[in-house]
Length: 348
Ligand SMILES: NC(=O)c1ccc[n+]([C@@H]2O[C@H](COP(=O)([O-])OP(=O)(O)OC[C@H]3O[C@@H](n4cnc5c(N)ncnc54)[C@H](OP(=O)(O)O)[C@@H]3O)[C@@H](O)[C@H]2O)c1
Image 1 (cartoon, rainbow, N blue to C red):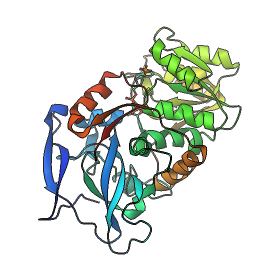
Image 2: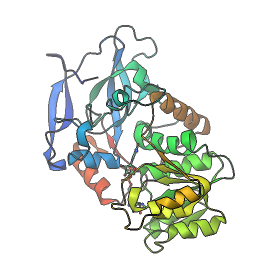
Image 3: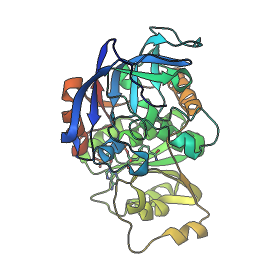
């Protein structure tokens, strides 16, 4: 769905990327507040959070799925302002979270469903109001703030898909997480929620201390221990059941090393750059390991995850929250890599 603007009426403020010029090319603009059509709702955004992917989009690095001008950021939460005709599941005042893909309601992904991603192919949430199809929203659990709720659509759901939907992690199993960004911290929390043991890595000893406080059983500094995969395998005896691979091809060799025979690598990110010249990929055959690509998830998955978060009263790990007027500073802070968990922007 396109972010259609009406003429007249109230105005909203939105940040807009005019082209692939980096965050300095992001402009604060005024637009008319849209009117929700049939089956749609108008949401007053209260908070948004940043993902690594948003650093790529400001540079125009999100490929053919990205348009300009573009309102960035996929992850937002807020309050329903008004509902269009035919909407009975929500009413004004309801607190809601928007799905990363507003056209992937459930079932298997498809090209069309994946073209409905916010802050890439479609306008995102760094704005005061946005219209959503009612079916693409889930209710915010009562125990979460709006900023915490806004951390769920991409980072939370990607970790959930890796650990629960595809990883099928059970009590007593072992999950390896890489670094202390949004996806990895959620993966640690979901693994613990499911009774699993966690081996967590970081480049920072200070962050490692925080990982321990969050319940990581074994921690490894991947800078000072470049063979962290070998160490993880030794620590577990047979290797881990699941690696949440946010590093990508640059960390895959060590992940294969860390994973047990018959284990899974949930392939998610691109943080670690280039592949090693000597690939360990053939070893995956000998060890019958599974490489599972993960692309966020559907509204149905978001619903299942928020229900689990509500029952367990799980709190997302928030780092800093910036004001709407400080949006550019929030991008710069995210790019610095200093964060532990999620970086948020308060909107309303
Ligand atoms: N496929 C999908 O659906 C999907 C969805 C969400 C995200 N992603 C991808 O997943 C990755 C993580 O996203 P995010 O938003 O969680 O990122 P993020 O919050 O920006 O994570 C940054 C952190 O990652 C860690 N890191 C960086 N390089 C690393 C390396 N070589 N090895 C291990 N850890 C490293 C660092 O942790 P320390 O400071 O502790 O070292 C860094 O602080 C990105 O590549 C993103 O594009 C994919």
